[in-house]
Length: 288
Image (tube, rainbow, N blue to C red; front, side, top):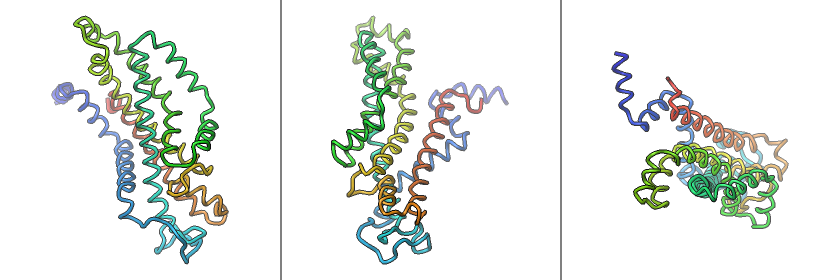
């Protein structure tokens, strides 16, 4: 029976083996469900809670049946703030992650395949990684002006070097493969070889990078918004913390900071566990 199961497993494609191993990791599955729920909250925010604006009669009220997460100093519902903050924080995180992945993918693959570009691009990546990221983010965001689009672009511009390094490392192991050499011999263009052989080979690594980069982008957005560099006309988890700090609610109304902080922690923890579970499943360590 064991031999039959082993033979059936060997017949599975790498993608199915990865999925089979991933499903056996309860933390990975739970993390994926949590991220899916956060994404649904972001998409359906208008159906979950009204947009928090104006002033309310119940100011600085603790959590209750009427206000699940309490209210702030001007009577706005903190639950509504967190729900709408999920939409902005996730949008900034995903947008910055996609842009950083695109830049890092192009530079990483180019450095691995075009050997003449490896040294200058490697110097560029090392130089970018050595820069003090947070002060530069603050400076660029302050000069560009507070907006959701600005935050996404600024975060992406300082997030791509790590992606490029990981992609280059993976691509370097693919370039010497016989099928790449054969593609060159038969006259395949560089663009065709990169698109047909290199990109499919680095996609699994990019999958892990997308999750981790999104998590870091959400953290960066929260930090910049907490410092007052976010869009004042929209809500994000960092903006909630910033307004709580400005109003002095950090000490007097714990609920105004607890729930957005828990939302940030939940997303970061879920993305970390998901990436670890996926990486273990891809390397067939889990359950083996």
